[in-house]
Amino acid sequence: MTTNVLFLCPHAAGKSIFASTYFRAAAARLGIDATAEVAGTDPDAQVMESVRAALETQGFGITDSPRLVSSIDTDGADIVVSIGCSHDEIPAESIIEWDVPMLSDDFAGSMNAIHRHVEQLVSSLATQP
Image 1 (cartoon, rainbow, N blue to C red):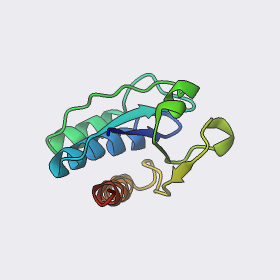
Image 2 (image 1 turned 90 degrees about the horizontal axis):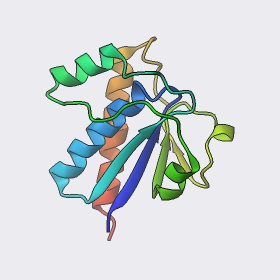
Image 3 (image 1 turned 45 degrees about the vertical axis):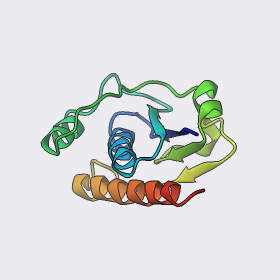
Image 4 (image 1 turned 30 degrees about the vertical axis):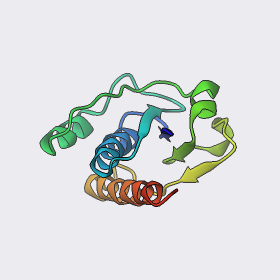
């Protein structure tokens, strides 16, 4: 059965882009049947150029674009991961919160924290029956 994961960050242009990209790669590496979507509560027009460059340097292409979260997104998700979004803005019953530094404050620290969170999430999915 496919696990549908929704990654949310306010602008859907940075942290959630890292998360979805790392998630897809880790899930594929471990043979986990999962999808990843990205949305935001106040989406930007495009992915942050620094995020695009960092992912391309790591060998990843970007397949997501910032967009506004909807109830269809949250209703269709098995797992909703909030990375800095207010709970009042997210119409979901169960939300996993990841506390990571702001990209503008600590770009590398934020990217690495997201990578660690993703690896933990994927590992937990790999151990589920």
